Image 1 (cartoon, rainbow, N blue to C red):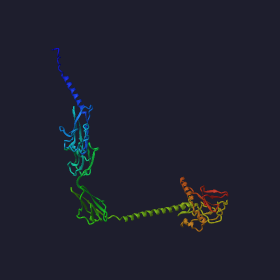
Image 2 (tube, rainbow, N blue to C red; image 1 turned 90 degrees about the vertical axis):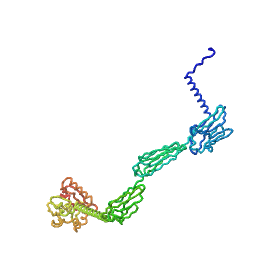
Image 3 (cartoon, one colour; image 1 turned 135 degrees about the vertical axis):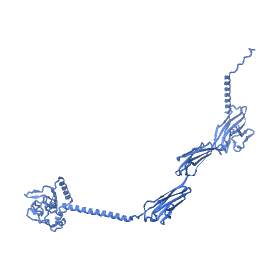
Image 4 (cartoon, one colour; image 1 turned 60 degrees about the vertical axis):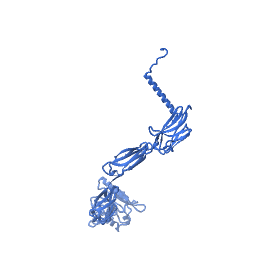
Length: 548
């Protein structure tokens, strides 16, 4: 007995646990292999009113499985299963669920590919759809597809009109209605408010999101901008909607146009009443503090026109405006001043002043020209008042020789070729004698010809340059000798400067030497040297005298 049977050894707990785990793995692998026989899509997305195709295919690699029937089962929620479509090779198609009866069709009449199409989708069609086969000998085989229904939200935003105050109120609203999944709402604003958001679930699985923007409204917030932005899965980009706040407030008023220059007789004086409010003021009223408006005043809308300024408008004007939230008024006092000068008379005065200045300038210019001419004549040798031909300036006998003392003339005669081209020195020579008195008597040096004095007595008025030029005893040739050219004047000016540099006031100016040229015309040379020189014939002549 003991030899024929072996004693059974008990199984240890560890070994029992290992065997159970291995069996579970084998079962899961078997189920995975079985699930792989029905090929379906794991997840699909669709929108209401659209259509969706649910694909199903049985894969039998060995070909030993016999298919008897296929069914589509809808699970809208956990624990609820409804057949919506059945196909049997012998009995055909069946749609037992009335909610899908008119909207579901088989794409193929075959057990191997029993795909279906659901049309006119509804949000309530979301859920799990299982393609289940009845087979022999393995039993039922199935695959499940999850259908996700999406809904684009209906976005909207609006402004809430409020009145300016001290409490925080809703000034703008934004909503994303009937969306799936739920939308997100954001606010973009610089007015310093805040927002709150609420969510409402619909019976068909959609979600409505609402957001409100709040602030303490002031008149300055009127017209300022806030922006609502909605983001949701079904939108390609965020939905953005700008809003301008509407804050109502009583009107404010001001008066413009008074320039403190309302003088008597003015006809273009205007006052304008400027008012701001929300809503805009409906009435504008002008009055005067003294009672009714003056007769010279006309009201046009918000403007007060003064036809002609007079003492009657020397008053206070009041402008009052109103809207539905209240009234406001402003006043201004106008002061009438005396009439200003006629601009035309002012122009006449200005013209007279300018004319006087021009006349004065003309007189100054004329005096300057005369002085310049007188100086030029003096430089050419014409004696001025108080000067004599024989002396320098002022008739002095101190030995100063000026141009007037050295420009000497002779009468007409036949021996006028002295110092000309010929060598004859016997012509008359007119010199100034140092020992002569102030009368300046001229004497002929060679042939003792006495010339008359070229001046009047000291008691009579000395001759002017004009008298000398018009003298009957002087020929045309002698008169032309007064007309010195500009080059001679420049020589004299240079000599004056030369004498001034050396500081010698007694420096002699250049003498003028007259000679006759080949053409018969007299020429005048200017030279600067010692006053006297000896001649070849033994005579002594003055270099500063003019020989004719």
